Structures are given as C-alpha cells and as structure tokens.
Image (cartoon, rainbow, N blue to C red; front, side, top):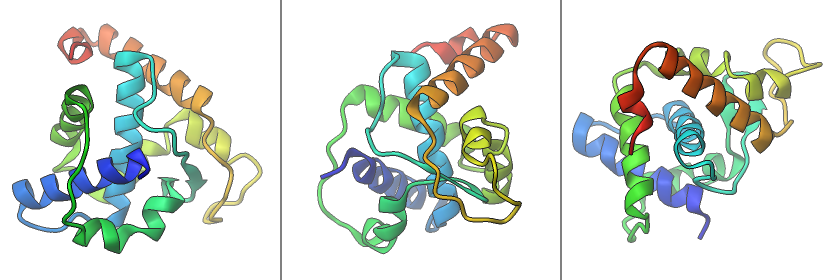
Length: 157
C-alpha cells in the first residue's frame, strides 16, 4: 500500500480522536503536504513518494482524493515508523485548529505550489506536479524562517 494512504488514515483517525469530528478532505491534503515538507526539513528525505498536483486550492494528491471515503472509513492497521508519527504529530498539533481555507491560503505561499501554477488562470484545477526538488526548497526556506524566529526547538525530533 502507498505510504501516503497510511499517513492519511493516521491523520484522519487522529483528527476524530482529538477533535471528535471528521476531517474534511481539503484539510487532509494540506496536512499531508505540510507533513511532507516538515519531514524533508528534519530528515532530508521524503515521508512518502507520492506526488501532489497544484490545484487552485493548493497541493492535492489524486490518490488521496480518489480514496478519501475509504480513508475515512478504513479500519485496517496503519504502519508508520516512530519518526514518521513524530513528524506527522508535530504538523497535526500545529495546524489541527486552523481552518481548511486558511491552510489553503498558507499553501499558496509555497514555492512548489506557485511554480506548479505557472500559466494557469485563477480557479483552474491544474494538473502540474509539485516537484519534490521544489518542496525541498520550501523545506529549506521554512527551516531558515524557524532559525530566524529563534524556534530551534521545532528543528529537533
């Protein structure tokens, strides 16, 4: 099974456990994107191999979109390493109370998303992939911002 689906199921269950409501699909996609970026920042490797596309509401993964109902209702076991859970938990804790559309707006500041939208009009879906090299650039920018803001504790796992 694709790693992104395990992470999506993990986030979905965690959201229900903590917030006592179902996560909406938009928020799930943004938490997945920010988890990927954070994991790259902390480990210099990828949390999952699956790609995002630059849709008008931000990064979207087509497999998660296709399997969203299955993800919400799935009861099977989830296999994540401790470091993967730790990073995903950090992102979850940071953004769980942020409105989905606010997360979408935050994702619109990401270089990888901006680059994927070149040549598209506002509101067009877009099918251009966010390149992993570009997400690495976003991760490096985020790391520099944390250091500048003296939030070094966020750089440790």
